[in-house]
Length: 293
Image 1: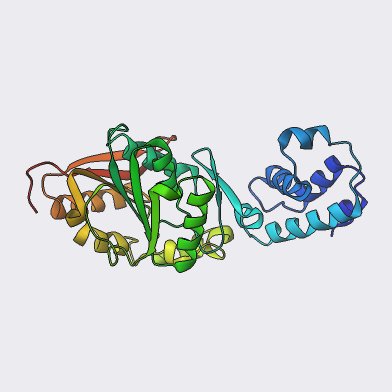
Image 2: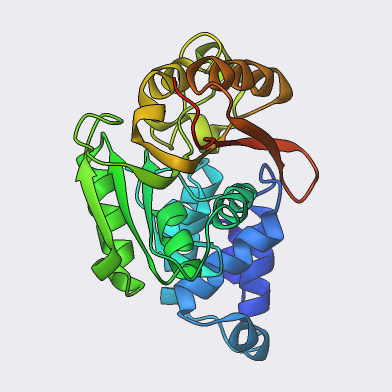
């Protein structure tokens, strides 16, 4: 524990001292506030109200230990065990990728491909925490879904999240290497498969490279090995007029993926998905009625 933290007499001073210990973070003040809320078991309003309250030694010790974990590069979400996505709380462990707000544009795109009043079947490939599937089910009350992941730990986390969110009756999860244990056709197939080139690992921030699961991040020399495997089979699991919605990393990958889609799902309607910053983030591939592979 730093001297400043040890000598902090108020909650506000404790947060300032914690932020000073996180100089390498891109958001030291925010990180310190989140960890203070977690330490004290309070929300933003309560933290503001308690700013001048005394910081007892036990709280400072707990807070200091969390700050040290964050200073070593451990992501906030793994420290607190939770991350918000689509306005809902998701439990996260090191078995799963941390949900990111940039991926919410995939949910919007997939949702818009079906009638919310009609039954729909959804397949979430590489479900991780289950955030994409659960977000879609929250938007589509008549839909049901299957989430698959090669990691048993991830499947357990996703199943727990669906239960916590009251979605278990419409969500099932199985361990599967992509389509290995999947049967039937789906109106929506959604995937945030690994797409980071193996050679990019040294350039990633420690938060990602040292903590998030490698199987969910890296996919060969150009980052597209997982999607090559998926595209080889995906058409056979898409219902007529079904949509395959996927995330990728940059416009170069986008061009390659559009070529894969055209080759494997002839006549498909292709739409680039952009995030809130107008960056290319994904691709929607809509199968056209009457088209044959």
